[in-house]
Image 1 (tube, one colour):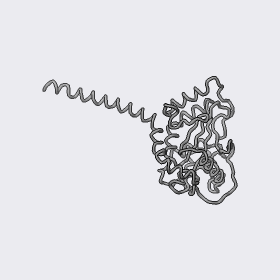
Image 2 (cartoon, rainbow, N blue to C red):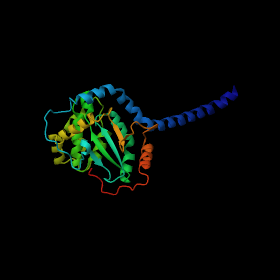
Image 3 (cartoon, one colour):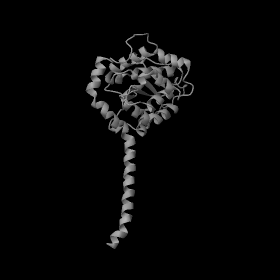
Length: 273
């Protein structure tokens, strides 16, 4: 009995240490896999998403069909409106189809953001952001449309990336259509130095880019995508996996390095935003 008493506290400390090591290992794995885990819920609703994509976005906002006003620097290659970021001559392109109300999109962005920005800064990668309004059609409301228009207004001001990131960092719950209120979007603009200007407010309140966003969403609906986010590297889907490998910050860097082997990094001035 005395031997057990002597060993008891020691064994307890060892067990606690081992448990902490296991917890650390699980946390590391969780951070790598969090994006893939998040997408399960989205893909689990594939049937619903498919109906929405085929039937149109009935709750995407006002029915007024104003002129299509593209934000400054936007592209429209293959009739797929996009806001480009990074150096225009970067050898690899990441196409990201997103919805600002989509929880899986926020998890993707919040996990992958630093790596994407690092690859952009090095000239290895440019990103084309395609804005969709899928959640408006699924949950009701207009937050997807309103937030996308506001992001396009931020692009006009040359501050798309900072505002895009701010929207995902502060994303409300999927069922809360907080982004349907222009006042909330303008409030968040104050977090981006120099963005909250009369021109930005007017652009947001007037819905200047609403028709452009709706055109982008139509391209998403017609693109055969299963949900948001849909992420393609040089045209190949990499979300949630590429081959047998799951997406992660390290794997994205590896895949870009493999794709860019023997190619020069981009040196052109960064795209607006």
